Length: 519
Image 1: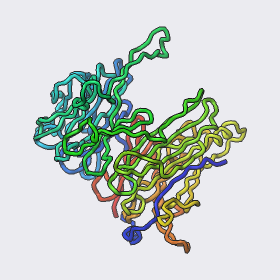
Image 2: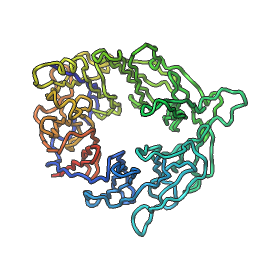
Image 3: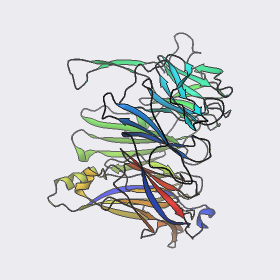
Image 4: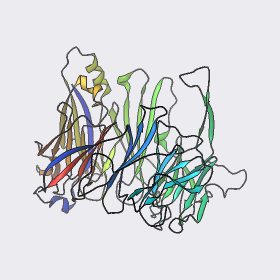
C-alpha cells in the first residue's frame, strides 16, 4: 500500500553546482533541547544583542495557571552554542494583542514590541544588563483595531520591515476603520504617516472596510458573539521595482496598493488596481470542502512576485474524495495572474515549499502527498503492517519549459499505520530538501524515520545516465542523528555561525537544535 508524495525540482544547470567540493566538511552533529516555559507559540531567530550572532526567541504560553501566562525567552548564542535554560525570561504584558519586531529606537539593535488597544509598545534594550527591559514603553499612541488581548495566543503581526527602502524599519498599524503606515524618518522618529484610502473622494469605492457579523459559540448556542474582521494585508513587491507593495485578498479578487515612490500608497488609479484571479474562484456546493492556500514568491528569479495557489477540494464526509491542485502563476508585474501550470494530487497536500535546489537563482518546488483514499483503506485493513509513503523528484526541463513527465528520484518511507495518527506522520513531511548540511555546496536530503525517531541525512549528488545530469541522493545516509520524538516541523539555518547549516526541530513543548561539528 502506498501513500505518494511529490517533489518538483529544477534541472541542474549552474556550473558552480556541478563543481561542488566532494569532500564533506562535517564530522557529525550533536543534539540539544531548549527548555520552554509552557506551550511553544512561535520561535524567531535574530541577533538581539548585536554581537553578530543568531539568538533564539521563544514565545510560550503557560496554560496550567488561570489566567494563562504568556512569556518571552531569549537564548543568546555563546561560542557557537546555546544554554538549555533561557538567558532572559520575562512575562509579556497583559496589554499585548500581537507582536512586532524591528529597530524602532535610537542606538541600533532589534526591539521586541507589541500592538495594544491604545497603540504600539516596545521593550527598550538595557545595555548595562545586556537584555530587554522588563517594562515596555509606548512608541506610538493611537487607537488600534484590537480591543482586548487573548491570553491563549499571541500572533506575530510584523517582522522587521523597511517599507520605504531608506534602511529604517517602518510599521503597519491596523485601525478600527483601516490601516495606517508609520515611516521612520530618523532612528526612533516616525515623522511620516499614510492612512490607506484617506485620499479617496466621498462616495468612492473602498476595499479596506471593517466587516462585522454575529456568530453562535459552540459552548452556548443560546448566546451569540459579535465578530469584527479587518482584511489582512500582504507585503509583496508586485511590479519588481524594489519597493514593497500592499496586497489585499478578498474572495477571488486581489487589490494592489502599488508603492510607485517611497512612502506613498495612494488609493487612486493607477496606484490602486484590482484583478480577479480565476484559480481563487470557488463553486458553492452543499456539503463540500474547499480551501485555498496562497503564497507569493519569486520562482524564476526575475524579481517579480509569482503566485502559488494550493486548492484542496472534496465532498464533506467522503474522505477519499479530497484532491489537491497546486496552481503556479508566473508574475507579469501588473498583478493579473494566470495559471501557467497545474499539479493535481489525489488527497491532501501540505502547502508546497520553494527552494533553490541547484544554485541557479531559480526557486524549485517541493510538495508532499497524503493519499486519503489509501489511508482510508489502511484504517479499514485487518492487517497492521506498514504503509509506504513515496516521495518523488521531478526535474525541470528548460528545453520544454516544464517538468519531466517521469521522476528522476524516488524515496520510500515505511510508517506503521498506528503511527500515522500518533506522530502525525501523515500530515507532517518526512522528507526535507532545504539546503546543504555537509558543506559540499549541494542540497542534501533529511529524512525523518518515524519508526526509530532518527534523522537520516543523505548527501546530494549528480548522476548522468546518458540523458544529461540528473539530481540524485546517496542511497545510504552518511549521518544518523537520534532525536527524542517526531518533530512538528524543522528548519535549516546556520545557528552556530560555523558556515554550515544546522537543523532546528520544532515541537509543541520544546525546541531541538541539531548542531553541525566541522572537521
